[in-house]
Picture (tube, rainbow, N blue to C red):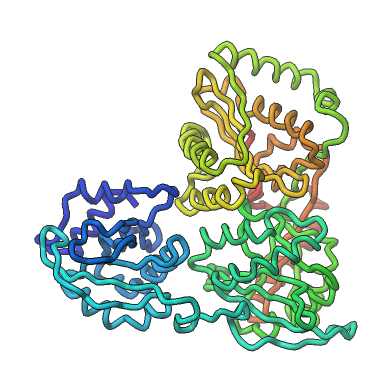
Length: 567
């Protein structure tokens, strides 16, 4: 969303007397508050901007005669003719942002033309979103000097929002279930972000009892992901209870996707590849019973999903096996294919011992990289953790650095969307002050030439992103930075460095082990899905085996967990 596209929409929506100068619109688009958040939202159909909200945090000082105080001021809102049916979606997303980012603050706007009566007609909608329309106290000067009534939406107290419940069981009455082993369990389902946030204490208690839990399954990480990406998703978080104790969580989501010529409802774990790696069930005990209960909850809700897709799964996980077997026994089609090859390094021995296992050419290239970088100016390596404000500043530098490298041209990395940028800022907020979010950078004469960041959790380090300045590519700054980071990790008492899904092939050169994972596909018996299942999981594998006997290979799509050799 840039100045030109916003101005184009504004000019089509508002008559000339209400149109604002382009420099004012541009200034609003540049606005950011002290927490690095923006309250400017765009409404898109495909890649076309069809509507927007421009808003900012305000102290109320410029609203004379009104004791409003701090508020979120809606400076402008517009939706193109022909797309007004999407207005509710835009308003819902905006209200969600305000409610979660600035809890307790009212929404304030000047109503021009017919918008005042429109807001009154939609009071029920705003109540569901957590706001109540207050009186319109007086007329003030608003857009382009035109008089307009001031409209205020006050936030409703917790629990007063229509359709929003306090209980974490936010969908319907819980289901009771007896597992095949005879264990009596109860399931409940959380279907919104507020319910997820209310699960925090119980989720974190379960985290402590799940062996091998990754940072991606922690409540802090999942809440940050949902906060950033789940506007258009339906949450379906299944909670398993033993009497009054919650003992398991199956964190699912439902999204819409085009599949085999039709829009399908796909159920998957919360998250997405490259953002939430190796998602899994969180069962503190009785894993098979919990998995069976989760599967039966999905069967009770089979009118709410068409296909299930799990990425980067451990094929030997008994909970996964029980979940799939339970669904299969109720005529759900089940297939698996290889997923990511996930490299990792265990910190056995010393850094020097690891380096000694590398080829003489590789070690020579590392020394050459150091000499070239030192020849370019004063070389400085620094590691930062434990200070959220400093980490936010460094992330801003990283964003600029990424724009000077190869990731910008390929549309990957943290800058590929506003949602991605906000996600990593939310992670810094969640993990920054605890010291778990670590940012490492390499500078030449104070100029950032390479940087990387990741998360430390339970003596494992998870490498999230790395970037370098393309102008210094001949000096291999990324490779050299990796070596400094790993040397530091050897001294930090860590057990493992996780390179995750092998997004960059060059990272495999440091790995000592790898985890092979599978994709899990489960299809309901709808005609088109049955045909697709038979082709992909019955006919195609047999055809590949037959043709391979004649030295013929079927063409395949490139693996989605590989990009290139750049570091």
